[in-house]
Length: 255
Image (tube, rainbow, N blue to C red; front, side):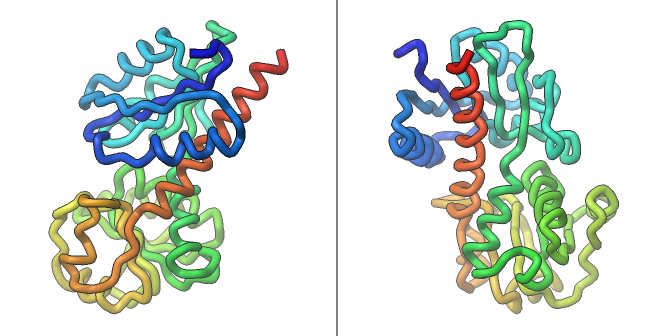
């Protein structure tokens, strides 16, 4: 490959279902950038070693998905503000022209959450009514951070109430207490159990977004209602990641 090409990859497990390569190659084509984007299966507890190895192999950047986002936090020497807040990385940038500069980690899942709300609710987050985020993992935390920063009225639910209280305090939002909500963003894994009264709230909400997409997006069929899948969230996150890599790419070629 051309020495100046943008060589990128997605790491995690599973990654076979991901449409990220299609999105990222389209972004490259639009920007007339030569490059590649691969899917690389990396199991849990191998994230840090994989990040080091892929940098040595000449990759310019990575997307990081489940279950490696928190592992990637500890693999990055430099971190963005959102990463410091949420404790998880989904985008890694390597400065391959400066070996002494460690990997830079940022997180674009929050940008994806905002894009998903805009698409599904046809409104800015601050104007979308009460938004309930389901979950307390890396994707949920990034969504909470970004939506709260965007002025939204946010609530959080987690099966473990203590975790819900912890993330609510961290991001200065409220724990969901059973009241009606307008928009739901579920970051729960496929097949997660949904009991009353949460099920009733999801059925009554104006908009429900499942962060999963493709065969993994099962929430709608399980609820028996229309649910927006996670493609808009992925697209927003993917574009934000690409913009980070593109800025680094242009910077390296100005030296």
